[in-house]
Image (tube, rainbow, N blue to C red; front, top):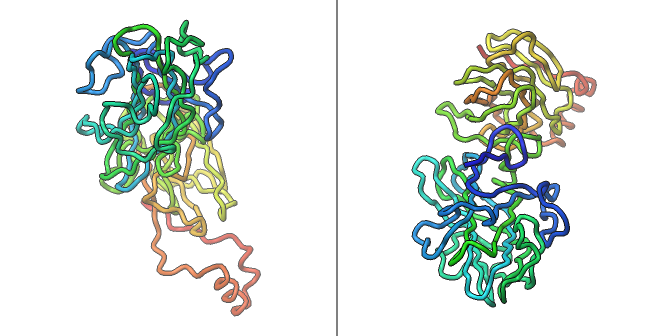
Length: 388
């Protein structure tokens, strides 16, 4: 079993068989840039796959070798939408019914929550959804997809790149799958592809744009690919479990409040520095406090903790005008660097402030003019009380 990262850094998705990214693809390719983000994608291929991998339980039949990839864990609230794009590519055909799929897995139980797309090789007609495979419980766009015929040139197919066994070979182009999560919980996405009836003339699949309510389900390597929470703590905080790379930023992402408390809950590690986003309606930086309540820095967007680092800190001074929702795990992307590569679980807990009523901007203007306090609008707001 090998470990790879979706885009390269903090945590690792689990791969069995042959997996990679678009950066590994060489030469001409029928798989063009993905229609989202920077166009990059991940892929799996039955070429160099393992026996028994990449199969749907109960649909092993004549399946032989394949590959599969299990995403990082992410927390999803009820009625959240999981979506991504996929592109099925096969050099096989003429009755050799290779197939690919994606499933949503409940981490707590290990059970398949939903089959969120299938694709299957056949000589002609639509190959998405896959013939004789479990029903797809997601919305596909397009709904039904035929093959774009011809020997597909794509280096993850190995020596079969550009080869066509018979009618049915080709690729689908990019198809979107969207699924609404029914129950809150911690989930993973499982992608698989397998050969059928033989272990040659290979098949693969590209996928990209893994989103939860339009927030990227990433690996923490960049602010555009942050780690999402793996669970919600009893006090309403966000919990992340990952293995950091020393001295390299890891970006984590919940949202909406006047501040957050960051704390390493388990694991022998320390936070060395923090990098913070610039929010609309909040352009004067933030205040950094120790967990004991000592002000360390004011009006900053990044901060280096002295010496060997800290086990946690408090961030305050997010303006109410930024309107950060403390229940939304998807907007305040924070970059953190760590002292070593020991696995940790850390929390990011919102600090909230009750506001009885916030007038609309035009109402604020009328109030300021009415009280003759136009000058006060330019002054820095008062700070909230630092929680103990």
